[in-house]
Image 1: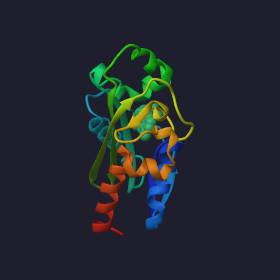
Image 2: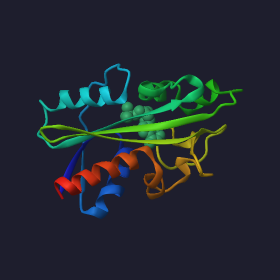
Image 3: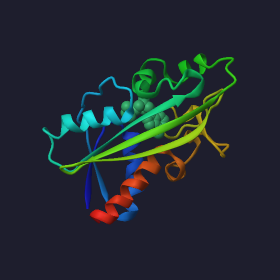
Amino acid sequence: MKMIFVTSNRGKVREAERYFSPMGVKIIQMKVEYPEIQADSLEEVAEFGIRWLKDRLDAPFFLDDSGLFIEALKGFPGVYSAYVYRTLGNDGILKLLEGVENRRAHFKSVVAYYDGELHIFTGKTEGRIIHDKRGRGGFGFDPIFQPEGFTKTFAEMTTEEKNRISHRGKAFRAFSEWLKENLI
Ligand code: IMP
């Protein structure tokens, strides 16, 4: 079967392909820019995206909205992660955390699937922001995020390794379990 993934992020597509292709699901990327509203939660941002897209695209399709939540910054950048990545980038985050001892952070991913109805799947991964960027794989904040219990950053992992423990991998797992029960 085929699944349309609405995103302009090639890194997210690579992770989805790696995750879903072994179960015979082909991921088709559709680059449609949808408005990302200012809201308090990733779920609200994702739901708004779906409501905007459902009048413009043929269902079914899914999207992913993710964020990095840094404890010492009270959850910032969180829902503003895309803007903060574009403006401050990884170096800016490292600078904000200079001299800060508490490096705890988590990533959260909200996968929203629309098939005439909305289905939400989430995943969260705890970890810490390291002091210097490490690794060349992945995308976004991957070089500065080291998941709990691991010595590598996400950017030092293969896509399979990252999928096994990442926020998005967990959301994909919940999504694929739902698909197996309902569709595949
Ligand atoms: P959005 O979900 O496309 O709004 O992404 C929010 C921001 O977080 C973007 O700048 C992404 O690059 C970043 N981001 C999302 N998921 C990940 C991830 O798995 N690793 C690192 N950065 C991520």
